[in-house]
Length: 361
Image 1: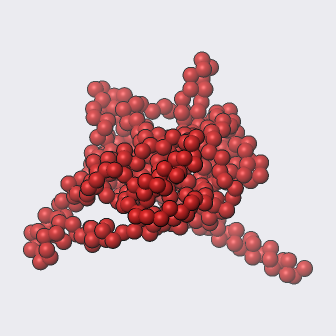
Image 2: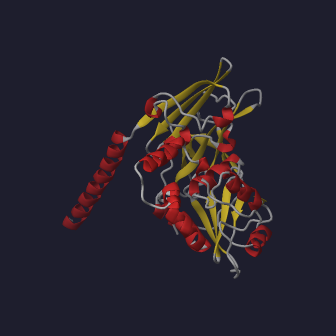
Image 3: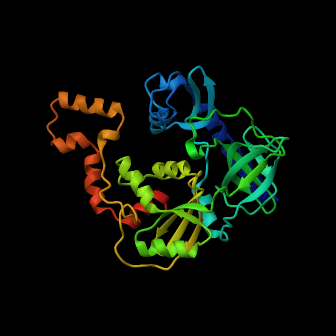
Protein backbone atom coordinates (compact mmCIF):
# COMPACT_ATOMS: atom_id res chain seq x y z
CA UNK A 1 0.00 0.00 0.00
CA UNK A 2 2.80 2.35 0.95
CA UNK A 3 4.64 1.59 -2.33
CA UNK A 4 1.47 2.44 -4.28
CA UNK A 5 1.13 5.77 -2.44
CA UNK A 6 4.78 6.61 -3.13
CA UNK A 7 4.26 5.91 -6.87
CA UNK A 8 1.14 8.07 -6.95
CA UNK A 9 3.00 10.88 -5.15
CA UNK A 10 5.86 10.70 -7.69
CA UNK A 11 3.42 10.84 -10.61
CA UNK A 12 1.71 13.88 -9.09
CA UNK A 13 5.09 15.60 -8.61
CA UNK A 14 6.06 14.83 -12.20
CA UNK A 15 2.74 16.22 -13.44
CA UNK A 16 3.24 19.39 -11.39
CA UNK A 17 6.77 19.83 -12.75
CA UNK A 18 5.53 19.47 -16.36
CA UNK A 19 2.70 21.92 -15.65
CA UNK A 20 5.17 24.35 -14.07
CA UNK A 21 7.46 24.21 -17.12
CA UNK A 22 4.51 24.80 -19.46
CA UNK A 23 3.25 27.74 -17.37
CA UNK A 24 6.77 29.24 -17.24
CA UNK A 25 7.18 29.02 -21.01
CA UNK A 26 3.75 30.56 -21.57
CA UNK A 27 4.44 33.31 -19.02
CA UNK A 28 7.69 34.40 -20.61
CA UNK A 29 6.66 33.96 -24.25
CA UNK A 30 7.08 37.20 -26.17
CA UNK A 31 4.80 38.42 -28.93
CA UNK A 32 5.11 41.44 -31.17
CA UNK A 33 3.11 42.98 -34.00
CA UNK A 34 4.85 44.47 -37.04
CA UNK A 35 3.15 46.14 -39.98
CA UNK A 36 3.54 47.95 -43.25
CA UNK A 37 0.81 50.22 -44.59
CA UNK A 38 -0.25 50.79 -48.22
CA UNK A 39 2.60 48.73 -49.67
CA UNK A 40 2.38 48.47 -53.46
CA UNK A 41 5.03 45.79 -54.13
CA UNK A 42 3.79 42.50 -52.59
CA UNK A 43 6.74 40.48 -53.95
CA UNK A 44 9.14 42.48 -51.75
CA UNK A 45 7.13 42.59 -48.51
CA UNK A 46 9.25 39.96 -46.72
CA UNK A 47 12.48 41.80 -47.51
CA UNK A 48 11.64 45.41 -46.57
CA UNK A 49 11.78 46.86 -43.06
CA UNK A 50 8.51 46.69 -41.11
CA UNK A 51 7.13 49.27 -38.71
CA UNK A 52 5.96 48.86 -35.14
CA UNK A 53 6.76 46.35 -32.39
CA UNK A 54 10.21 44.79 -32.29
CA UNK A 55 10.70 45.53 -36.00
CA UNK A 56 11.08 49.23 -35.12
CA UNK A 57 11.21 50.29 -38.76
CA UNK A 58 14.61 48.55 -39.05
CA UNK A 59 14.01 44.84 -39.55
CA UNK A 60 12.27 42.90 -42.31
CA UNK A 61 10.19 39.77 -41.79
CA UNK A 62 13.09 37.61 -42.97
CA UNK A 63 15.45 39.37 -40.56
CA UNK A 64 13.03 38.83 -37.69
CA UNK A 65 12.91 35.12 -38.52
CA UNK A 66 16.71 35.01 -38.38
CA UNK A 67 16.52 36.68 -34.96
CA UNK A 68 14.37 33.82 -33.67
CA UNK A 69 10.81 35.04 -34.29
CA UNK A 70 8.04 32.88 -35.78
CA UNK A 71 4.92 33.89 -37.70
CA UNK A 72 1.84 33.29 -35.57
CA UNK A 73 -0.65 34.94 -37.92
CA UNK A 74 -0.81 37.21 -40.97
CA UNK A 75 -3.46 39.75 -41.92
CA UNK A 76 -3.50 41.42 -45.35
CA UNK A 77 -6.10 44.09 -46.12
CA UNK A 78 -6.69 46.41 -49.08
CA UNK A 79 -5.83 50.02 -48.33
CA UNK A 80 -5.55 53.05 -50.61
CA UNK A 81 -3.32 52.24 -53.56
CA UNK A 82 -1.77 49.17 -51.96
CA UNK A 83 -2.13 46.64 -49.16
CA UNK A 84 -1.79 46.81 -45.37
CA UNK A 85 0.25 43.95 -43.89
CA UNK A 86 0.10 42.96 -40.21
CA UNK A 87 2.41 40.21 -38.89
CA UNK A 88 1.81 38.67 -35.48
CA UNK A 89 5.13 37.22 -34.31
CA UNK A 90 6.11 35.05 -31.35
CA UNK A 91 9.46 33.88 -30.03
CA UNK A 92 8.13 30.34 -29.40
CA UNK A 93 7.83 28.03 -32.37
CA UNK A 94 4.09 27.24 -32.86
CA UNK A 95 5.10 23.81 -34.17
CA UNK A 96 6.19 21.86 -31.10
CA UNK A 97 7.19 18.29 -31.98
CA UNK A 98 9.62 16.35 -29.78
CA UNK A 99 12.43 14.06 -30.95
CA UNK A 100 10.86 11.02 -29.29
CA UNK A 101 7.65 11.65 -31.24
CA UNK A 102 9.61 11.71 -34.50
CA UNK A 103 11.41 8.50 -33.50
CA UNK A 104 8.04 6.90 -32.80
CA UNK A 105 6.78 8.00 -36.24
CA UNK A 106 9.53 5.97 -37.86
CA UNK A 107 8.63 2.89 -35.78
CA UNK A 108 4.96 2.93 -36.77
CA UNK A 109 3.48 1.44 -39.92
CA UNK A 110 4.06 3.10 -43.29
CA UNK A 111 2.12 6.31 -43.70
CA UNK A 112 -0.79 6.44 -46.13
CA UNK A 113 0.00 9.45 -48.33
CA UNK A 114 -3.53 9.79 -49.73
CA UNK A 115 -5.67 12.80 -48.83
CA UNK A 116 -8.61 12.32 -46.43
CA UNK A 117 -11.40 14.81 -45.71
CA UNK A 118 -12.50 14.92 -42.05
CA UNK A 119 -14.94 17.06 -40.05
CA UNK A 120 -13.45 19.09 -37.15
CA UNK A 121 -15.16 19.13 -33.75
CA UNK A 122 -14.48 20.47 -30.24
CA UNK A 123 -12.84 23.57 -31.72
CA UNK A 124 -10.87 25.81 -29.34
CA UNK A 125 -8.79 28.90 -30.08
CA UNK A 126 -5.97 26.86 -31.63
CA UNK A 127 -6.97 23.16 -31.64
CA UNK A 128 -9.69 20.78 -32.81
CA UNK A 129 -10.52 17.06 -32.80
CA UNK A 130 -10.87 14.79 -35.87
CA UNK A 131 -12.37 11.29 -35.85
CA UNK A 132 -9.37 9.41 -37.15
CA UNK A 133 -6.76 7.73 -34.99
CA UNK A 134 -3.33 6.17 -35.29
CA UNK A 135 -1.95 9.15 -37.19
CA UNK A 136 1.64 10.30 -37.06
CA UNK A 137 2.62 13.37 -35.10
CA UNK A 138 3.42 16.14 -37.56
CA UNK A 139 1.07 15.01 -40.32
CA UNK A 140 -0.52 18.15 -41.69
CA UNK A 141 -3.26 19.50 -43.89
CA UNK A 142 -5.57 22.44 -44.44
CA UNK A 143 -8.91 23.42 -42.94
CA UNK A 144 -11.63 24.53 -45.36
CA UNK A 145 -14.92 26.32 -44.75
CA UNK A 146 -17.77 25.81 -47.20
CA UNK A 147 -20.30 28.62 -47.63
CA UNK A 148 -24.00 28.05 -48.31
CA UNK A 149 -23.48 28.83 -52.00
CA UNK A 150 -20.90 26.04 -52.25
CA UNK A 151 -17.83 28.28 -52.42
CA UNK A 152 -14.89 27.24 -50.26
CA UNK A 153 -12.11 29.10 -48.48
CA UNK A 154 -8.96 27.87 -46.74
CA UNK A 155 -9.18 29.06 -43.15
CA UNK A 156 -5.95 27.63 -41.73
CA UNK A 157 -3.30 24.96 -41.91
CA UNK A 158 -3.05 22.42 -39.08
CA UNK A 159 -0.96 19.48 -37.94
CA UNK A 160 -1.51 16.40 -35.78
CA UNK A 161 -0.22 17.04 -32.26
CA UNK A 162 -1.80 14.03 -30.50
CA UNK A 163 -3.30 10.76 -31.73
CA UNK A 164 -4.87 7.70 -30.12
CA UNK A 165 -6.67 4.65 -31.53
CA UNK A 166 -9.84 6.50 -32.53
CA UNK A 167 -9.28 10.27 -32.60
CA UNK A 168 -6.55 12.87 -33.09
CA UNK A 169 -6.02 16.43 -31.91
CA UNK A 170 -4.84 18.96 -34.49
CA UNK A 171 -3.24 22.35 -33.89
CA UNK A 172 -3.87 25.36 -36.13
CA UNK A 173 -0.93 27.10 -37.83
CA UNK A 174 -0.93 29.92 -40.43
CA UNK A 175 -1.58 28.91 -44.04
CA UNK A 176 1.72 29.87 -45.68
CA UNK A 177 1.52 27.73 -48.83
CA UNK A 178 2.11 29.54 -52.13
CA UNK A 179 2.99 32.76 -50.24
CA UNK A 180 0.17 34.78 -51.79
CA UNK A 181 1.24 38.16 -50.40
CA UNK A 182 -0.84 40.00 -53.00
CA UNK A 183 -4.19 38.54 -51.87
CA UNK A 184 -6.08 39.93 -48.84
CA UNK A 185 -6.64 37.40 -46.05
CA UNK A 186 -9.95 36.39 -44.50
CA UNK A 187 -10.96 37.17 -40.92
CA UNK A 188 -12.77 33.83 -40.66
CA UNK A 189 -11.58 31.43 -37.96
CA UNK A 190 -12.01 27.67 -37.67
CA UNK A 191 -15.42 26.53 -36.40
CA UNK A 192 -17.13 23.21 -35.69
CA UNK A 193 -18.19 21.49 -38.89
CA UNK A 194 -15.33 22.81 -41.03
CA UNK A 195 -13.39 20.15 -42.97
CA UNK A 196 -9.77 19.14 -42.40
CA UNK A 197 -8.03 17.87 -45.54
CA UNK A 198 -5.39 15.55 -44.08
CA UNK A 199 -2.20 14.95 -46.11
CA UNK A 200 -2.88 17.98 -48.30
CA UNK A 201 -0.82 17.61 -51.52
CA UNK A 202 1.33 14.84 -50.04
CA UNK A 203 1.45 13.41 -53.56
CA UNK A 204 3.34 16.45 -54.89
CA UNK A 205 6.90 16.25 -53.60
CA UNK A 206 10.46 17.52 -53.70
CA UNK A 207 13.01 14.72 -54.14
CA UNK A 208 16.55 15.06 -52.83
CA UNK A 209 18.88 12.22 -53.86
CA UNK A 210 22.67 11.80 -54.11
CA UNK A 211 22.80 10.66 -57.74
CA UNK A 212 20.76 10.06 -60.87
CA UNK A 213 20.34 6.31 -60.21
CA UNK A 214 18.76 6.77 -56.76
CA UNK A 215 16.69 9.68 -58.10
CA UNK A 216 15.19 7.44 -60.82
CA UNK A 217 14.70 4.57 -58.35
CA UNK A 218 12.49 6.65 -56.04
CA UNK A 219 10.44 8.05 -58.92
CA UNK A 220 9.87 4.52 -60.20
CA UNK A 221 8.92 3.25 -56.73
CA UNK A 222 6.42 6.07 -56.07
CA UNK A 223 4.60 6.32 -59.38
CA UNK A 224 1.55 7.92 -57.74
CA UNK A 225 3.63 10.89 -56.64
CA UNK A 226 4.46 13.85 -58.84
CA UNK A 227 8.05 14.93 -58.15
CA UNK A 228 9.26 18.41 -59.04
CA UNK A 229 12.57 17.86 -60.80
CA UNK A 230 15.59 18.67 -58.67
CA UNK A 231 16.90 20.92 -61.46
CA UNK A 232 14.20 23.44 -60.54
CA UNK A 233 15.37 23.48 -56.91
CA UNK A 234 19.00 23.61 -58.08
CA UNK A 235 18.21 26.61 -60.27
CA UNK A 236 16.54 28.30 -57.29
CA UNK A 237 19.62 27.76 -55.10
CA UNK A 238 21.79 29.20 -57.85
CA UNK A 239 19.48 32.21 -58.14
CA UNK A 240 19.67 32.95 -54.39
CA UNK A 241 23.41 32.09 -54.24
CA UNK A 242 23.04 29.33 -51.64
CA UNK A 243 24.92 26.11 -52.51
CA UNK A 244 23.84 24.35 -49.30
CA UNK A 245 20.08 24.17 -48.70
CA UNK A 246 19.17 24.69 -45.05
CA UNK A 247 15.99 23.33 -43.48
CA UNK A 248 14.44 26.80 -43.84
CA UNK A 249 15.38 27.11 -47.52
CA UNK A 250 13.98 23.66 -48.34
CA UNK A 251 10.80 24.36 -46.42
CA UNK A 252 10.23 27.82 -47.91
CA UNK A 253 10.85 26.58 -51.45
CA UNK A 254 8.58 23.55 -51.07
CA UNK A 255 5.77 25.64 -49.59
CA UNK A 256 6.13 28.28 -52.31
CA UNK A 257 5.59 25.50 -54.88
CA UNK A 258 2.65 24.07 -52.87
CA UNK A 259 4.39 20.74 -52.24
CA UNK A 260 3.20 18.62 -49.33
CA UNK A 261 6.22 16.38 -48.78
CA UNK A 262 9.99 16.21 -49.18
CA UNK A 263 11.64 12.86 -49.99
CA UNK A 264 15.29 12.56 -48.93
CA UNK A 265 17.46 9.56 -49.85
CA UNK A 266 20.06 8.61 -47.24
CA UNK A 267 22.14 5.49 -47.92
CA UNK A 268 19.67 2.56 -47.91
CA UNK A 269 16.76 4.55 -46.49
CA UNK A 270 14.17 6.99 -47.80
CA UNK A 271 12.88 9.63 -45.40
CA UNK A 272 9.44 11.16 -46.02
CA UNK A 273 9.22 14.64 -44.47
CA UNK A 274 6.16 16.85 -44.03
CA UNK A 275 6.70 20.23 -45.69
CA UNK A 276 4.75 22.35 -43.20
CA UNK A 277 6.14 20.87 -39.98
CA UNK A 278 9.40 19.49 -41.43
CA UNK A 279 8.80 16.37 -39.37
CA UNK A 280 9.98 12.92 -40.46
CA UNK A 281 6.79 10.92 -41.03
CA UNK A 282 8.27 7.76 -42.45
CA UNK A 283 11.52 5.87 -42.94
CA UNK A 284 11.38 3.27 -45.69
CA UNK A 285 14.06 0.82 -46.82
CA UNK A 286 15.52 1.52 -50.24
CA UNK A 287 17.97 -0.38 -52.39
CA UNK A 288 21.42 1.09 -51.77
CA UNK A 289 23.06 2.41 -54.91
CA UNK A 290 26.80 2.94 -54.70
CA UNK A 291 28.60 5.61 -56.66
CA UNK A 292 29.51 9.24 -56.43
CA UNK A 293 27.29 11.37 -54.18
CA UNK A 294 26.63 14.82 -55.60
CA UNK A 295 26.40 17.90 -53.41
CA UNK A 296 24.06 19.53 -52.64
CA UNK A 297 22.02 16.77 -54.39
CA UNK A 298 21.55 15.28 -57.84
CA UNK A 299 20.95 18.14 -60.28
CA UNK A 300 22.21 19.10 -63.71
CA UNK A 301 22.50 22.72 -62.60
CA UNK A 302 26.20 23.51 -62.26
CA UNK A 303 28.27 25.99 -60.27
CA UNK A 304 25.84 26.84 -57.47
CA UNK A 305 27.99 29.32 -55.59
CA UNK A 306 27.64 31.41 -52.47
CA UNK A 307 27.53 35.22 -52.64
CA UNK A 308 27.29 37.81 -49.91
CA UNK A 309 25.47 40.12 -52.31
CA UNK A 310 22.21 38.58 -51.09
CA UNK A 311 22.94 39.22 -47.41
CA UNK A 312 21.10 41.89 -45.42
CA UNK A 313 22.37 45.46 -45.29
CA UNK A 314 23.28 45.05 -41.62
CA UNK A 315 25.86 42.43 -42.66
CA UNK A 316 27.53 44.91 -44.99
CA UNK A 317 27.48 47.53 -42.22
CA UNK A 318 29.36 45.13 -39.95
CA UNK A 319 31.88 44.50 -42.72
CA UNK A 320 32.46 48.21 -43.17
CA UNK A 321 33.17 48.56 -39.45
CA UNK A 322 35.72 45.75 -39.66
CA UNK A 323 37.50 47.49 -42.53
CA UNK A 324 37.62 50.78 -40.62
CA UNK A 325 39.24 49.04 -37.67
CA UNK A 326 42.11 47.85 -39.86
CA UNK A 327 41.45 44.14 -39.54
CA UNK A 328 44.69 42.19 -40.15
CA UNK A 329 43.05 39.07 -41.62
CA UNK A 330 43.13 38.24 -45.31
CA UNK A 331 40.62 39.83 -47.67
CA UNK A 332 38.73 36.56 -48.04
CA UNK A 333 38.52 36.08 -44.28
CA UNK A 334 37.28 39.65 -43.81
CA UNK A 335 34.67 39.42 -46.57
CA UNK A 336 33.27 36.04 -45.55
CA UNK A 337 33.86 36.21 -41.77
CA UNK A 338 32.70 32.97 -40.14
CA UNK A 339 31.59 31.82 -43.56
CA UNK A 340 35.22 31.59 -44.66
CA UNK A 341 35.57 28.34 -42.73
CA UNK A 342 32.22 27.18 -44.07
CA UNK A 343 33.45 27.78 -47.61
CA UNK A 344 36.35 25.42 -47.09
CA UNK A 345 34.01 22.90 -45.46
CA UNK A 346 31.73 22.94 -48.52
CA UNK A 347 34.38 21.20 -50.56
CA UNK A 348 34.75 18.45 -47.95
CA UNK A 349 31.09 18.02 -47.05
CA UNK A 350 29.70 14.55 -47.55
CA UNK A 351 26.13 14.22 -48.83
CA UNK A 352 25.16 11.60 -46.23
CA UNK A 353 26.71 13.44 -43.29
CA UNK A 354 25.13 16.74 -44.34
CA UNK A 355 21.56 15.46 -44.61
CA UNK A 356 21.84 13.29 -41.50
CA UNK A 357 22.66 16.42 -39.56
CA UNK A 358 19.90 18.39 -41.28
CA UNK A 359 17.29 15.75 -40.41
CA UNK A 360 18.74 15.00 -36.98
CA UNK A 361 19.08 11.25 -37.58
